[in-house]
Length: 351
Image (cartoon, rainbow, N blue to C red; front, side, top):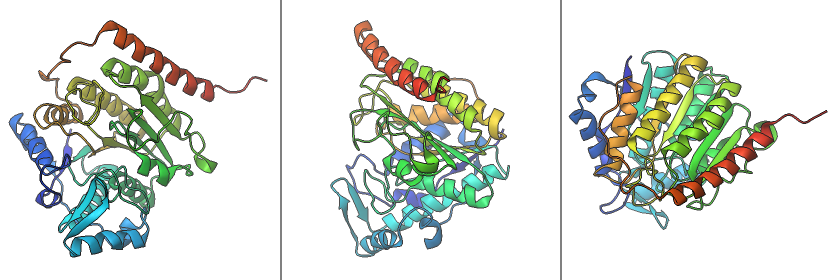
């Protein structure tokens, strides 16, 4: 089992100190892989910058040139929390281009699967607007590249704590991409309701699971068993891309979910199994969020890498404190409702 790894020091040049999405995120992620001796067993994949045509598979040219201009002028704000700096344009281009090449390497079986440790992240980036720390939508661009390369269909599973609104917008009307998002609601950016299911050729190919605060591993894994994995099996994609955001971890400062590294491990194992059964194991994980640098991000990266490499679980932090049974029961009720709504929608009409 050969797992490809995408990483480049250009990713450290983007951003500003004290921002939640800062260079130290990748430093602790790489340190976690090195500390567990996994790094030496991974195959480092070459990195490169996406060109304008590749970025414009998803984004409007005027917007791409705006990001370039901001960087060349030394930086500037796209919105209240998304700031371009001198090196943002180059870092974002390399993130997108490297995700393209990693996806193609997996598709062509040069590696079995891949973990892309890139920044800036991408799943909030809309065709004409960056937002939520994101500039170019790495995973959407990689999906477009796969389709252009010969794939007939691609599935994207996004388990970041925030809804991947940019990715959803790109593919909402399309029949060649299944988009599944598990996220906290209410929370920025305010999209991702159960009723958002796609339009036109994409009708029924957007699956949103908006979880309440304090949802735990058991809730996510139940949703995987009853909704996510069956949806993948029914769609039969040629590759599975994962927006791997680790802010659902219970230590994360920006999200109020209660997942553990073990939860990310088991979700990745489930996706590995689905990829094996559906698309010759073609699975690509792309880093999105995750902002606890002491426990949440490094442990979750370690867990994902272990699953991709078919390694056993490690000793990761458990929930502390344990949730009150009444709290768990309240989350159970919401999850029951989410699952029921999706199951009812998928049930064929009676004669």
